[in-house]
Image 1 (tube, one colour):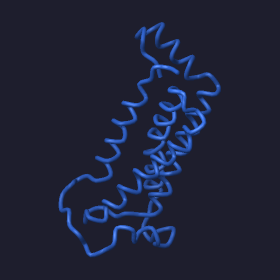
Image 2 (cartoon, rainbow, N blue to C red):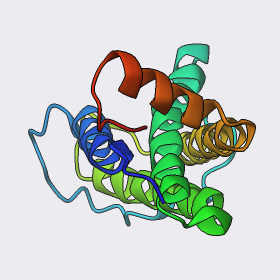
Image 3 (tube, helix red, strand yellow):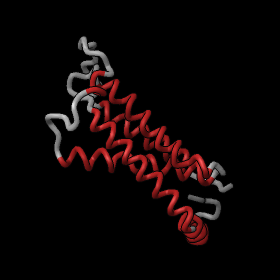
Length: 152
């Protein structure tokens, strides 16, 4: 087990995702639509852009990376990737549900799938870097050059 800053970074990053997903936080109201209706909408949705695709994958990648890294560094190696994927997917699902109550936001099953994919890619990246020893090398470099007790 290693000391890690990945847990607090993951929490801060999750808060950033919540902020970005629910901004501007105004106009909350029930619109007479069940919050799960977007789950059965056809894929792809009628309106989507390449920017949306990239943003959703890239937006959840760091969360999956940090969650998996935190678990890998604290001795939960075999469940790190599945739990990071589950956590990222559940956060995305919750936020898509909440967006149904914000008239300026549009919940999307494509967003949910892309967010889950981003979390999975991030988690797999963390597992690969940990397996290759890159995280340990970075921690040694950082301890030697920057802060003695800091670890990835």
